Length: 59
Image 1 (cartoon, rainbow, N blue to C red):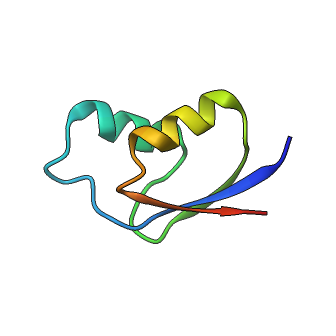
Image 2 (tube, helix red, strand yellow):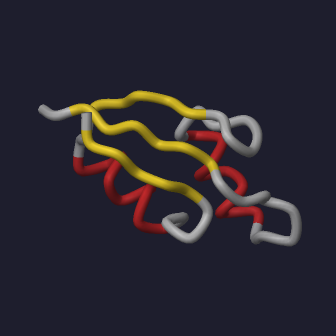
């Protein structure tokens, strides 16, 4: 599997609880925080749900 770098670019303030939990499940904590994860179908699905809050780069 390929790795992807996910960076939070927008705040979760005034977002639904579901989106907040998804950001937390991805391992993101605050704006400009980045994590490198395997590009599994589960992770890709989570990223799609919050794609307006994050930036994605292929590694």
